[in-house]
Image (cartoon, rainbow over all chains, first blue to last red; front, top):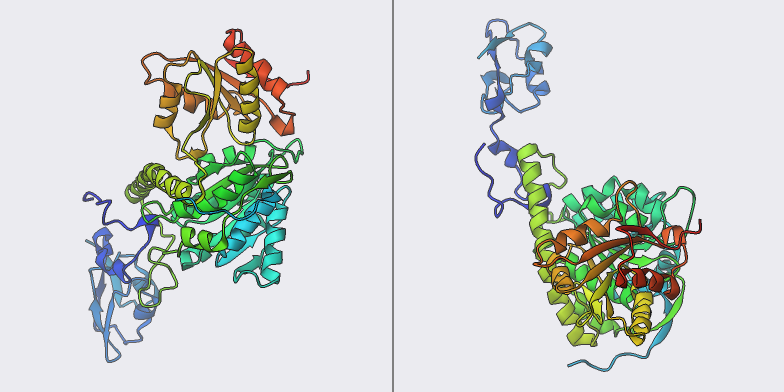
Length: 91
Length: 391
């Protein structure tokens, strides 16, 4: 971890700029990566609904893939997928 | 220039604090009654009912809820006051370090009372000392006047942009809370001007700038935030001195980090907290009449700990007697080790004695203090002494 600057650090563990969690790349923590089998996917979007980190990329009701910057590799998407279209593989 | 002060009034300490709060007119007050603090919130709730203040007065079901509400409302951006004592402060304990680490300058009056058990409602400093390490600033009053003055000074120190820490204003239960004394109030207009507007740092209720308070910290941030609090405590010493100066200009009443009485040419000094400072002044006068060069000092500002000031007061003394109205069982009174730590940088360290006294409201009279101080003067005191113990 880089050194903390006391002068820039808001007091009281406050977050004074909203949306700052976007800057924390939780994808760095990942030890498993979701891999999508496009042939099995029915675009039910359960994975999108359940993902705790907004890491499922969806456009016009279609699953595009995963945004890896914030994916922690928790595997919830693979777990809830009714078609077993997502497998977690070691990074 | 000190302007003409209003007429003196006869008041007890609790009433004086409620009156100071009325003059300040805080945004929110949440409190739960507990002897000997009850008169503060009782009187203040009358001011609220009479429409004398605009304060939102919240009657909560417990002290834990009271302080939780206070921390939240102060986070939201409201100037918030509360008061408690003894078991009430103990029940707040979980919220004490949370409030201070959230850096919200809640103002709390504590009517010092022994902590049960055995069940006891009389005065000692067990409650304030149990709250000592929770990150709150602490002032100690020694008469009704300083109880009132501390109530007006407290928000200025706590809310200073460099400090932003909650503050306890202590006053001895019954001795100061219930006993009526003569005191000089300030003009309400002067109080309002002196205390000024509360300017919260990124408050929760700023809808144009959404913020998040009370976050989780990993070890690195937790340690850094604690250090940040430590820096604020150091700064609070300077801020308190600035505020005291300004207060003196306005009222003529002088306070210091360490208030002292006849210490300059003394060979033996007592260090004591709260109302006993007055009793010890009388003791000092009588001992001086008998030719003994004694003096007394009190850490008016107890947190932050005014170490440098204490060191200066103790310099060149033959002995220092530290009086504690609380006992850290198995060790010393809580003041003693800190006073000793302040003395170790002196070239010649005075003899250091610790006197435990007034526990659970045990009577503190001039004769008791004089007997203790005479033992300090003739060198027959032990390192740790229990005075006034009826066994």
